[in-house]
Amino acid sequence: MKIAYICADPGIPVFGTKGASVHVQEIIRAMRRAGHDVHLYATRRGDQLPADLADLPADVLPVVAEDPAARELATVKAAEELAQRAIADGADLIYERYSLFSSALAIGTARLEVPGILEVNAPLIDEQRRHRHLVAEKLARDTLRRQVAAATATVCVSEPVSVWVAHHACYRQLGVIPNGVSLERFTPHPEDPDGVVVAFVGTLKPWHGVEDLLAAAALASGSWRLRIIGDGPLADLLKERAAGFGLDVDFRGAIAPDDVPAHLAGSAIGVAPYPELEEQYFSPLKALEYMAAGLPVVASEVGQLPLLLGDAGRLVPPSDPAALARAIDALAADPEARVRLGAAGRARAAASHSWDRVLQRSLDLAGVGT
Image 1 (cartoon, rainbow, N blue to C red):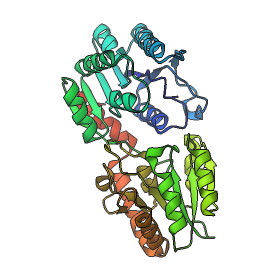
Image 2 (cartoon, rainbow, N blue to C red; image 1 turned 90 degrees about the vertical axis):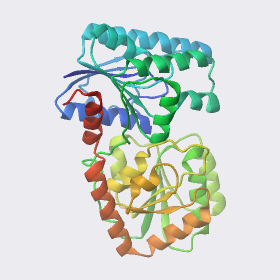
Image 3 (cartoon, helix red, strand yellow; image 1 turned 120 degrees about the vertical axis):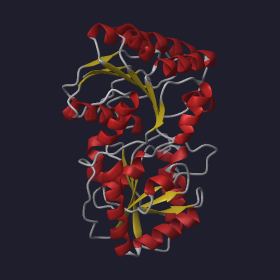
């Protein structure tokens, strides 16, 4: 099957280090492993091109505009042009990652008379209004309705996202399919023999809870070291906070997705310390990556995490550094529990959360088979 994969979100470098970038790359890899011919259409390339995707046909139309209103209009035009290019190239299926102002799937499926899958990862209209600038909100809502109505299937990464879509648009098929993980890239490794390493992977932004993690490390009574893999707008502040606590934290900075498993190797525990937020609609990649790597997980009891982890980790109240410190201390002192929980996580990831399985469920929802 010839698949046009569209990502018209200028905030996502498809070959970047963000979780969204990982998601784009892994779904495309799953498509290619299944024997499909994939052509990428995007508005932002990124500079971390993986070797195995170097031969991927790609059309990239950058959105260049500083003013929020102009940027929204430029995104609309870029998405329309990407749709036209996909139409000219031809496709048997259009798969689009939902973005605020793209109607590419609706345009392409109507013209080519082919099925379309719309993947929705977040309530972007609400996010944009709350955290950034949203000028043309009515256009964004109209675009969402048009895209969902045109899609043969709309795939949401969590139940809250599914509820949000259903509230705003009429759909044909609507399903919840959480994120996946690469079982080939993330595999178990021996722990560092010099001591217990507690690892965090992710972008350093307020809603990832790294400030609480540093506070927990300062409160810890056990012997463990903290490794932070990732970069972001809070990086300098977090380094200052760590120094203020007298902590020797191993900050690894921005890491290409292909290199993350190597930086995670040697860790004994993975952490997902999400703070208490009004809405927890995410499907956390980091938790799945820890599980696939055979790491026990200490995570906040929010959103999908309890269902995702099952018997593979320990849950703590969000925004509670003292509880987080106690949970990590307990696991750091109990190697047998680490082995047991880590094995359970790897088995759980392998049974239910491979990217191949995620893709197949999406195709099945759309009724397009393999």
